[in-house]
Image 1 (cartoon, rainbow, N blue to C red):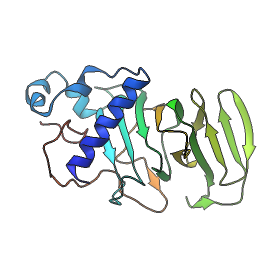
Image 2 (cartoon, helix red, strand yellow; image 1 turned 45 degrees about the vertical axis):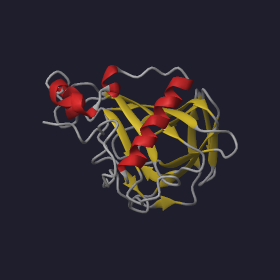
Image 3 (cartoon, one colour; image 1 turned 180 degrees about the horizontal axis):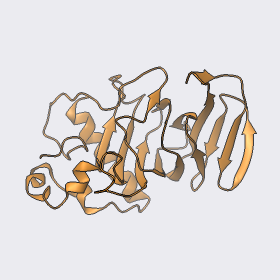
Image 4 (tube, rainbow, N blue to C red; image 1 turned 90 degrees about the vertical axis):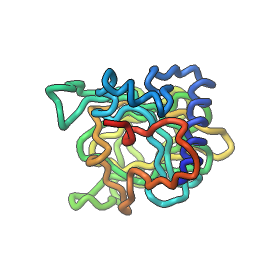
Length: 226
């Protein structure tokens, strides 16, 4: 991705958070040049990969495949004694026409929440023992206290305020419904490690290679100084 594209995505998510009155923690607003001084007091932000995360899944087509995220809180599976939180929270933004591709998580479970804006379409499949997609069996849906079943590949429409529980090895993808606007998306989950807990089908990258065509507006969660 070009740095200019990342900067634009960050500003778009900031505006979406402001529009729906989701106030971000202070470290999300630090300028890149502040981090050399700030890092000594914010080591948890670096170690637990909190903060900004913009990805095109390595496909180079962010307008159609990608996601803008902020990890607000998290523990560490690698350093549980130092960072013992067993939970995580993210806020995400997607614009119309943009898809988060099909994937599951081996370890974490999560709630995906429509925090505001348009409708969010979530497509679901079970996985087989060999971790491939199960195109046949019905999928159990747990959504805001309601339990029901849908056919493989069904799409669940989440209106603002609604959520869906994503359990381990449940394939899911999501995108805003066209014609209803961009969506502010919440995620509440177990302690999260994006380096090792995403199984994309087909396989995709997670963190983008960056072409530096302008200075960074904010540092990403894998860019903090030592």
